[in-house]
Image (tube, rainbow, N blue to C red; front, side, top):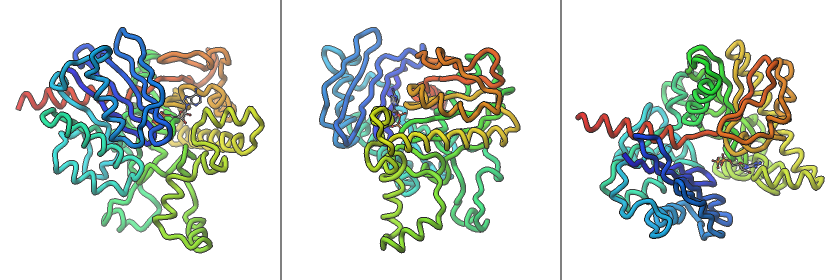
Length: 403
Ligand code: ADP
């Protein structure tokens, strides 16, 4: 089967067409810097990367149109007609408690997801725009939604409940859901496979550090905790999101600046994180690094706060699991920013971690960057949410055939 996987994120839209029988990627690509100065790159299997100059991509609808045209492009396309795509698998971020596994996308599912938009204001609308654009172009193609919240459903009440009156959980299901589950699942398993370990016997901390960032504790293949919460706002300091903040500070700010909740949420989601700390210099860690080299103290501070917060979560998750075997870095920053990894691991020497500085600069699909004598394995694993989604979508299509 040919599966088109759409991963429509906050600032980027990644796509792949995967042959589910061979797990071969037929084409992969990414629309980046959506809403900034759109970049579109894609690479057909065995072909050369096609890297277009900046493309007008003001929103996700335009991004989907750009990639669809590339798929059927006469010269570099991989299909002649959209009917060659058997299934479309969509990464969907927040399903509340309505969705605990993958689903066939129907009008009802879209309606139910729209109701969850408030829970993930940066993501769910972006996901739905991707779904909508695909349905318009390929109305007869099976579409499967794979939720980012599903893998985290193994969290116990002691991890997912807030210190709020219990009735609010009963009444509104206010609890921590955790996100990036597709990535945490793939990466924790791939790390164990790479190390020749049985996933049912290892304790892993996955640091998914991208524009959105989260950390998970995965004990014996099941999620014990995840740094994101009721929405993907909780936890680490991120590109534009604040992460953990004392709600008392927000009430104080609202009073001082005469802001309502909507305005406060916009500040927390879009104006905070390393963008806000760096005085709006950038939410892009590459740009912050370049500014830091030029002695921009706020860029340096933003990166320092980010690293410190990651290290604190790793330490607490080692406690939550009463030990850790593998610490794995993944996503844009985790996979590419060796200085950031070095800085984070500097805080973790108490766990017996030592990093091989040469290996830390290696690039690869999976690399062990800790020394042979390090008490904990530290790895960099390229996340592959698309493959995980393709597997789920193919399994769903197969199960429907049997009906
Ligand atoms: P998302 O999917 O949440 O948009 P990504 O996982 O694509 O996020 O990560 C995007 C982030 O990764 C950006 O902040 C970008 O600056 C950072 N990044 C990508 N490459 C590098 C690099 N070589 N060095 C440092 N940061 C990088």
